[in-house]
Amino acid sequence: MICAVTAVALLWQNLAASGSLTLGIILVALWAGIDWRYIRSVLLLSTIFGVTLLFFHGFFPHVGIHQLAGRTTLTPLFTFPAHWRLLGGQALYREGLLYGLSVLAKTLSVVLIIPVGIFTTELDNLIVGLVRAGLPYKIAFIFSSTLRFFPLLLTRIQTITEAQRLRGLALEKMGVVQKTRSYAKIAVPLILGVLLRSQMLELTLQARAFSGSAERTQLHDSRWGPGDYLLCAGSALFWGGALIAYFGWGIGKW
Image (cartoon, rainbow, N blue to C red; front, side, top):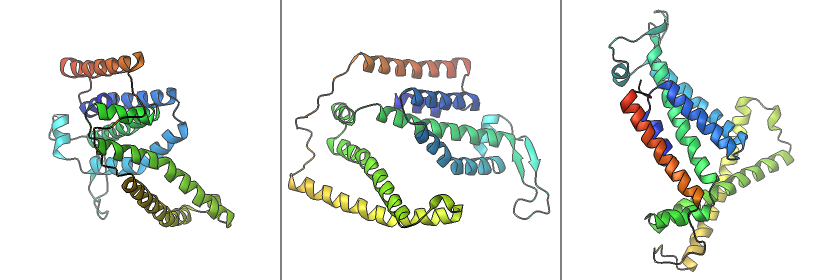
């Protein structure tokens, strides 16, 4: 599913198609039970990235945008006065904005589909499935360890924040600059805690003579059910239908 949606997101160039895909993924994520606060945080964090994309692609469109639009002259929406410094005489182009929005929609689709696949699958089943699919066990172990570290990081951040509140630090009464400085101070104990846990994990693996050999028994058994086959078939049909629609009828093209 993740591979199919990522491939379609990279294939489509049209803003309407890419935006519809992003909206569909958000609806699927909500239907799957993913907390709206998580989705909202992803959207808020992507705001800075989106503004940067729109600025550079809108004001400084590259050659690829000209090729997609099929013209050498783009459509200016407005032009800064010539006497302005830095941006004087620079125009904001419609095609550049559309391309920037399309890239932002692609990025959100890829970023949001990953938690849909990970949060709705038991980690043990996911790792065993990856190993059986041929992924080296060491890589699968690193992947699983990374996923298991995320809840620990969130818990650690919450603990540090609560400790600051107990010491009289009221984040809700601070401005943006003060909040940024306060959150920056969290990084030091957070990084130290992560390094300590990493060292403990390394010592534990060495004590148990971890070799990463693929010839090992698994405590958890991963078996495919009807829902797994249905999801794989639906993902394949979605990818195949997107290819046919793209090359046959031009759906998703610029």
